[in-house]
Image (tube, rainbow, N blue to C red):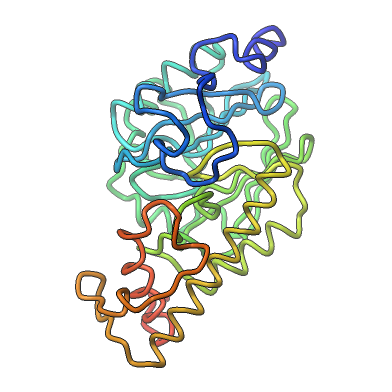
Length: 310
């Protein structure tokens, strides 16, 4: 295991970072990083026996990130991939890393780009326990591996001597968001609560609560914050860009409030005339802006009007 970790850290095994990659480009677009779809899946060690795993988003514009935690008594996986093929690739790569089975799958995000690949995982490890919030359990009723255990506030797993804290810090991107914190290494996997280099995506979001959830995560002062989409760089950059994402989120919400007060129409994303009048500031250059801006405005309008699901 130690030899594997050392090789991964040095980039000596297949699946690690491309040498031509433009590092520290925060925009989550794959081409902005100098990568292609052929560079995925890939994974790299972020600490002994802890791996950040990257596939690509169904849009094929950006990446999707999972966390693999290897212990002496099994693997804990946080989030999966967005389709059956990528789910099988995830299974195959976990088996390259360790012979230990996946004991737990934690649902950080219940969206399809993180959970549609669950079928191959459940087939490979039938005893795998899936953990989510109650909201995500409801959203995943028809998933190939629906959650059977729930976290409403906090749950601590101790698997093979590794402490894993599962945190429900509040509704954010999905309304059923979970974060995972590893006290020994002070690593926090934020799933889609943190979208590095991505325009704030709000299809099922709770915008104002999302900001507060990020603040709670920041108050824990982890050494390394890992995003559910976007690139993994050094700890200082990841922390700085989490702050930048929160500020971009606040700018988008403020702009939504301004346009709502001005009665700019946005009854639904498909007919959101307000998006043409929006001024996004630093968020203007983020990945998926054109697709996500009308959705975000419509969701902010719903929040202002008290129309979000309870």
